[in-house]
Length: 554
Image (tube, rainbow, N blue to C red; front, side):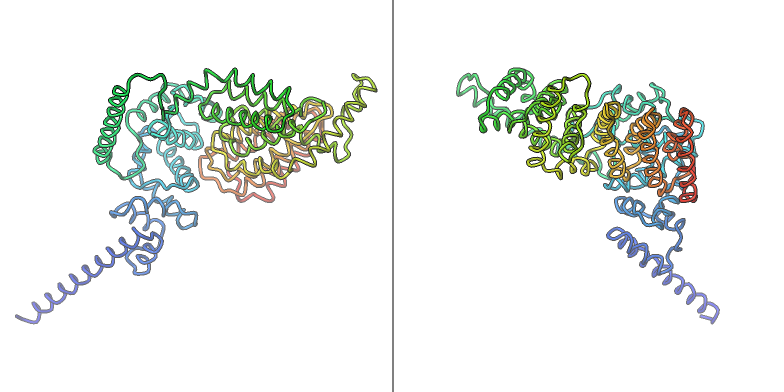
């Protein structure tokens, strides 16, 4: 063999060894990524297997056979580099001419969505921006509308195909939930119904499991259940007929409750009204509490509202009468329900929050604030004195027996309410706030609590926060236009505080949520005739521009 041939062979061997060594290191990096994504990427970039840029890392994640769960975890991380990788990853996917649900299926084909809502939120925000850029001529007004419908579609898929959810959302209910979300306009009904039909027919799977692999297990479980039921039926036949049946089905509880709730409510109410026995009252309050829980969990709105309304009446917070111990215990029961079952109260939050508002009014009287009754021209002097004495006694009893911390927890813990319940909570609090503002004299307790609620819940995912703000914006706009200048100025200053906090967040292209957030200022300055109000709004906007100019986009 001559020297040329030997050198060529040596070079070939060296190249082969290099490629083999490169492949070994690449496989090790992939193995490391599938266990600890950040360590895997750090190893791959340190060893110069991939460039340390977001584009190259995103390309690696799209082209290599990696664990899709780990890909979702990595691109959902809050670190800036991970965000850049997320942006590059999704920018590398083509969604052109796809329906929104088809595009979502295409997206989750590349990775599994992480479990944490905050990570899902970041991914969906970028997806919405990319989808809108790829499909500017569809029904969507902006990227916000894409984002809202994307999230609503994911929630629809969960609702329709989760075995834990027995009552499935209907087409009409689903379309109602996203009404006005297309830049204050509605999506076409047929467009939404087509999405519903496709999701109902084909599950939007967010995992890598093959649905076929679950069928044998499912069939085995079903077979066992059928066998068990058959055995029970045979045993019943052997024992003979019986008038009573054991049941483990929840729906049977619902049927029985629907039949007996009226006499139960009447019995509890009559005993509460006429009895002073401590043990008997305790049993009745337990009955109220359990009845409300049952009605709420089965979505029996009429029954739930009836029990909550009756219980709130026994607090005597809306009637000026001398409170007894049973009335104080009723207040405690109502507060306990608000803390433990807030996710099930829905519209009944209005009754609960009205009682909380009246509690605060009595606490003010207990601290020395003059009662409105004392200056009422509609009541005789003797009547005013008697009612004022009752209010003073009630305020003293509440101060000694009701823990203010428990009331505060209702608002502080609002961030733990689920995405639908927090919207109900805010709607009901806005209603109570409006009642306070239009009362004589006007009060701002619930308006203050709305500001606190907004702070506590501002970090929720954009889909939920947009629904919350849709309610808050209308209320703050209404109050900002109030004829009482002090009330209006308080609402505007509250808006300024919330806007300064909100503008700390960055906004992607083609989104209009900042614009929607600041729109109440525009509406108030257009409708208000007060020079002071207009000057206050201009000062607020100037402060926001000076402090948050770099983050202002839409």
